[in-house]
Length: 168
Ligand code: OFO
Image 1 (cartoon, rainbow, N blue to C red):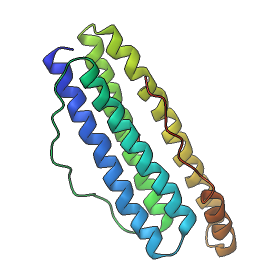
Image 2 (cartoon, rainbow, N blue to C red):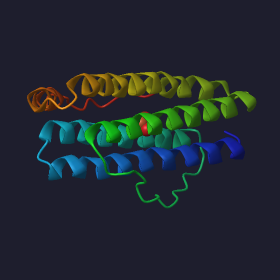
Image 3 (cartoon, rainbow, N blue to C red):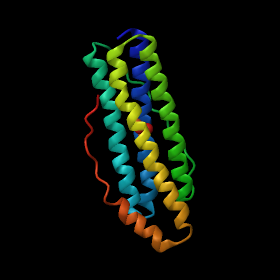
Image 4 (cartoon, rainbow, N blue to C red):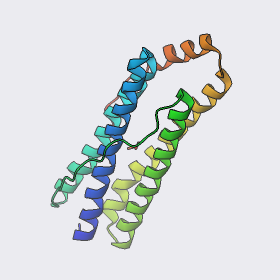
């Protein structure tokens, strides 16, 4: 890969590690409230983000590039109600989608067909990431102030498990 593309991959590794860190911070909010199903949902998210970062990390090595890790920023979000937090998650995922698309454009500009094909997995993954968050947001809107329904959703989210993705 050319140096410019390697740098862009490294920037995305940092963005994925930031996502991991952000969701770890959000998980803590739900742990504090003993909403263990929501905490579990974030825990799976943390593992997924780590896998996304490692997929890029391994790919840079595979292509003979140099992995350069940068500082991970402090998680930036406002503690609020559950719906507020998930709306911030959606916003964050939309931002990540834009970053992935920009990285794919960069690979396209470099005419690096292998990198374009590798990044296709991430492009599709972002569609799923956004859809799953939208689903939770619409459930939360329906639930409103109904505590019983909220506990049912919490139980449902407790069943989510992490499956190591096959990237690329
Ligand atoms: Fe890595 O997909 Fe979320 O951020």
